[in-house]
Image (cartoon, rainbow, N blue to C red; front, side, top):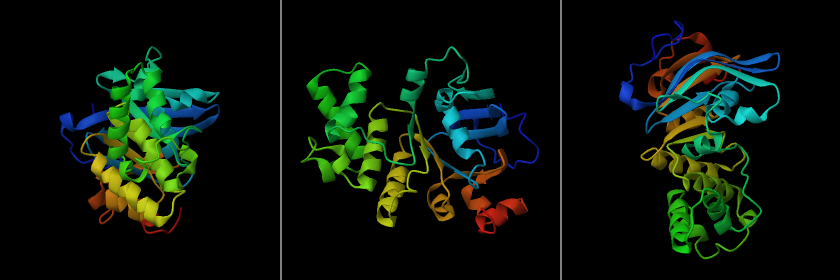
Amino acid sequence: MLTQLKENIVYPEPKKQNIIIEVNELNVYYKNNHAVKNVSLPIRERSITALIGPSGCGKSTFLRTINRMNDLIPGAKCQGEIMYDGINLLDKKIDVVALRKEIGMVFQKPNPFPKSIYENIAMPLKFAGIRGKKRLNDIVEESLYQAALLDEVKDRLSQSALSLSGGQQQRLCIARALALKPKVLLLDEPTSALDPVSSAKIEDLLLSLKKQVSLAVVTHNMQQAARIADQTAFFYEGEVVEYNDTSIMFTKPVYKKTEDYINGRFG
């Protein structure tokens, strides 16, 4: 359903089966603030889509709308379509808890529970109805392995998650999201609070994860977007100015505003 895309957005020609989420004419309002304006954007299966743009341009709002996190904000209102598996995720009948199992989210600041490393992953599983010590142990181990954290914490799973470094806490949050076997993972500036070494580990992790899940990542770091993203969308004042394969956008952007932002002339 890419027939009604805005004329000023340059899209590649993705195969239909490669799109896992298709956003059509999305508008998001916070009372009188029109935060996201007529955004149409595909998120491809098993790839990394970077969302770039200056602060306050709507990219984090767009990301949070996909798994209905904006429902928690008083006065927020959404219009349009977010199509996933043939269903509009903005439908009020959607089971939001079930939705967030399939479309997980990781935030800018690591937010581990003030519990043990083990319980940070096991507790959401228990809430999801998963029982049996062996099964829980297996999923905890697998999730930590997927998040490239198992070797670092396997001998101290009973210790507080708050004893971990910032980078380890962020990977634990990713492991916690992965434990529920999501098909899509949304990440809102997952490395902005981390040192370069920890950021590099997160980037390597995301590149490995795209073999299993589809990822959309908000980032202010142009070098990071160029390193990890397959596609990039440039947001400005609530609109998508340009969307294309990252390799094309970062070398031959169509619009001067895109070129100026990527080259650091504003933002």
